[in-house]
Length: 122
Image (tube, rainbow, N blue to C red; front, side, top):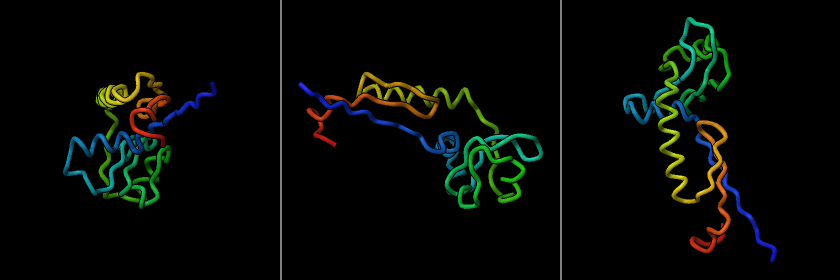
């Protein structure tokens, strides 16, 4: 029997910035950058969509991000919190399929083979 295998990919875009906006509703809709703080050396770890409108993206030097949008909210990363949220999300994914392969704190592959019997084919 030739059984098809289905693999899903979960990528939590702008994850660090999304966690910050979830926990701080006053940040929603405003440009938000997680990474090094302005005036320090370092790069952007995550930028929300409002910040991306200014051309800010991951790995951009923080000085360039600040030049493009000085009014953005700049926050240092809180890796312990992001890891905790990531574990919560992966636990939710494990209610869909027992095979969840984390790639990073905000990305995983899921084996969805067999789910078509429960929810229909993709």
